[in-house]
Length: 205
Image 1 (cartoon, helix red, strand yellow):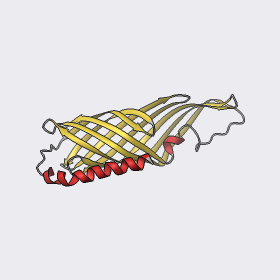
Image 2: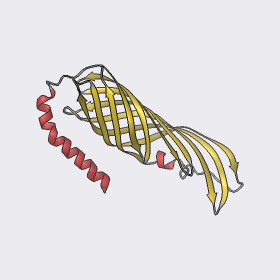
Image 3: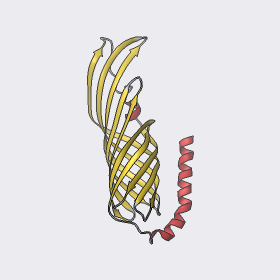
Image 4: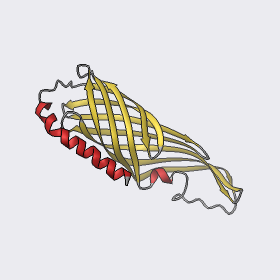
C-alpha cells in the first residue's frame, strides 16, 4: 500500500503547483545545451547504485539523455547490474517531469545452489535484456539556471526481451536442473523493477 500512496502524494503535490508554474514557465530563462549529470544515489528493486547521464535540451520542455547505471550486491550471491539507456524527458511546468527510456541491461551473477546443506551447483551467469522504463520526478535549476538538482521519485522498469543468456559452471551435481524462472536474476528480470528514488546533480552549459 505504501507505493500507491506515495505515487498519489507526488502527483497531487505537482498538480497543485502546476497551475502556478505555468504562469511563469514562459518567462523562465532556460538554456538549450549539453547537460552532464551525476547520479550519486539510485535505488532500483532494492539494489543501491549510482550512475551518470549526458543530456541535451531540445526545447525548454524536452530533453534527450543517455544514461548509465551500475549497482552491486554482495551477499550469498554476487550480483552486478548495469543499465545503458536512451531517454526522453518532458517537463510539465517548471520542475515536474516524466521520463521514458529504452535500454539494455547486463547482469553478472555468481551463485551457489544449496539443498539440505549440500552444494548442488556453483556457476557464473551473464544475461542481457532489452528494457523500457517510465519515471516521474522533479528538477530544479539553481544559480542562473545552470546547476541541476533533481529527483526521479518513483518509476518502473520492465524487461521485454532476453537478448543473451550464458552460464559457466564451476560445479554441477548430477541431479541439479537449472531453472531460469527461479535463478538469482529472477528478482531483476521478472515483473516490474521499482525505482523508489534517484538523486541527480549536474550542470547545463
